[in-house]
Length: 82
Image (cartoon, rainbow, N blue to C red; front, side, top):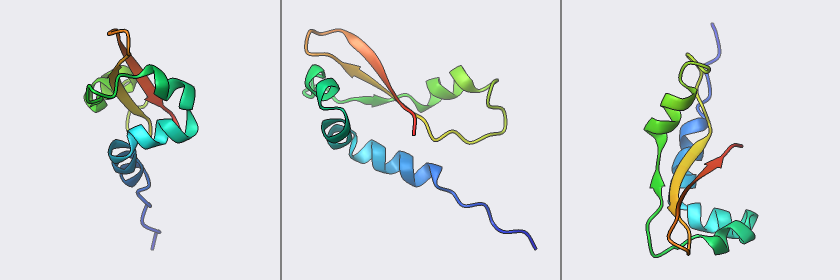
């Protein structure tokens, strides 16, 4: 009987979604200060799947992509790759 495959991807993504602000503040404080936290970051899971879908066919992806706005008003994307 084969071992069930552990699902670490979804809990990681859920934690990152819930604590994205704190995660960046702790691990990447310089990046954190550039972001306008008055605007809520948007998770771009669908867009990330479209970007890497063909290359990662059949594989789960632990990466997380967020759309954020910088203090100067510009939009940018932040990719978290564990």
